Image (cartoon, rainbow, N blue to C red; front, side, top):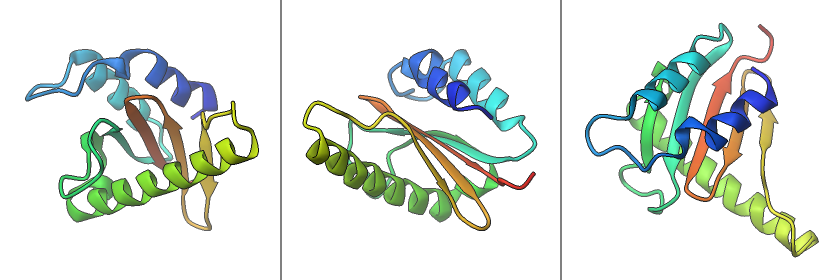
Length: 128
């Protein structure tokens, strides 16, 4: 998946308010499209309107890696990472802001695209 694909999701279809019961069809289509990449293990959209707590702030997710407690754990960690890195970016250059993060480990790669209202998180296997 390219950087622009992840960024365009938040700039396009994922801008709708958090779904109450049924998510908008555009959101479902976007999540399905991102999840279809063979190296993608999961896609998650977090709401920034509520602080990540017991519910994890998860608006929608796909993939077993983001199910249940695992998804809530990723949500808490991603929220903390975005807050820390965003603060560091603002400290270095007062007018600047975090727009995209890519974190690669031995096993996985996290692609995080923050927006005013949402965080898009994609977990993929980088070697495939």
